[in-house]
Image 1 (cartoon, helix red, strand yellow):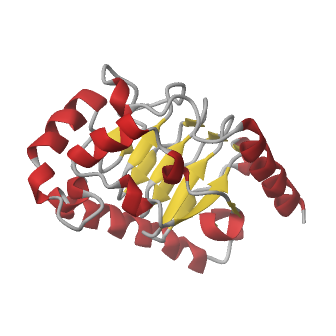
Image 2: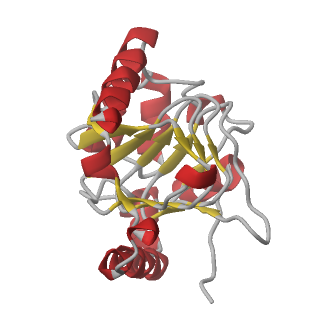
Length: 216
C-alpha cells in the first residue's frame, strides 16, 4: 500500500526550511526529498493511463491537456512575499512560471465523473472555481486549485498542489489528497494566494473557452 505524505501549511513550512539548502537548480526541493513517493505517484498515474486500453470508453480517464484550455501561468503574478517565502523553502515559483498552464473545470460528477490526468511534469494544472470532481485527479506537474473547487474523489500530485483559501482539502480513509508538497490554508499568510491568482475576466474567459470546447 502506498504510504501517503500529506503536508499541511505548518508542516510544509518546517520541511521546506529544513531542506532549503538542497534546492539548487531544482524548482521543487520537496519533490527531490521524496523521490520514492514521487516515483510511486508516477506509477499510479501510468496505471490509470493504461485504462485507455479498455474497450469500454466509460472507464477511460480524461487527458487534462487535451480536455482543458490554455491559460496564463498562475506563477507569473505571485505576490512578492509569497514567492519569497516559497523560494526560501525550496519551491522556485519563478522557474515554474516558465511552464505552460492548462485550465480545467466544471462538473466532473455523477454520470459525468471521470478520472482526470495531467501526465506532463512541465504543465501546471489549474482547476477552476466551482469545479466538482467525484473521481480522482492525478498530476505530474504542479496543481493550483482555485476558489471553492471540490475534489471529493481525491488528488494525487507528484509536484506542488496548492489550495486556495476556500478550496476543500479532504484526507480520510476514503479520499486522499497528496502533493509534494500539498499547501493548504493555515497559519502562515505567506503560503496563501487567497482564493484566486486570476482576474475575474481571465478566469471567465478560460471557463467560457472550456465550455465551448467541451460542447464541440
